[in-house]
Length: 156
Image (cartoon, rainbow, N blue to C red):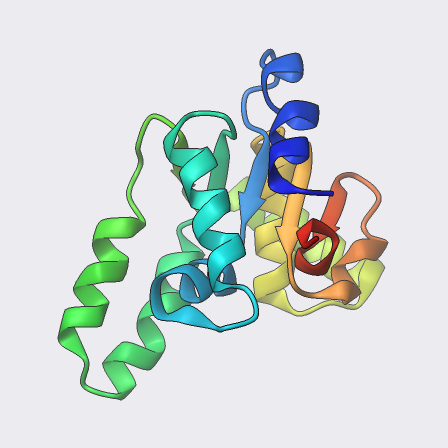
């Protein structure tokens, strides 16, 4: 499935749904710092988000995950890039980690034996009524409450 198909399938035709897809931290890292295999794809997805074709959500947890390496490496400029990129905008919601999200995450973690951070991202997507969960982690495809799309599925 190409990103244009994703936006057609999950964008305008289901605009009544509050948000469409959740983006995990590694997707921001791929787009901003570049991982050769996925950088262009993430830039394309980002352009669809910026254009409003895809309504995106990410958890506030994403900010902490993205900042860890720049802080560890003393790269303050990169930390600022992530802080600027991970802010609410008309087409990107940075959702808070609420008590309800944490309780739901605990349930998902127990049911699917996944890590806490992954469970928080999934619980955020469900709480925000997302229809798609975009990730590069195939272990998360077992969660049935969302359509999990893996990055390789979006490549030609």
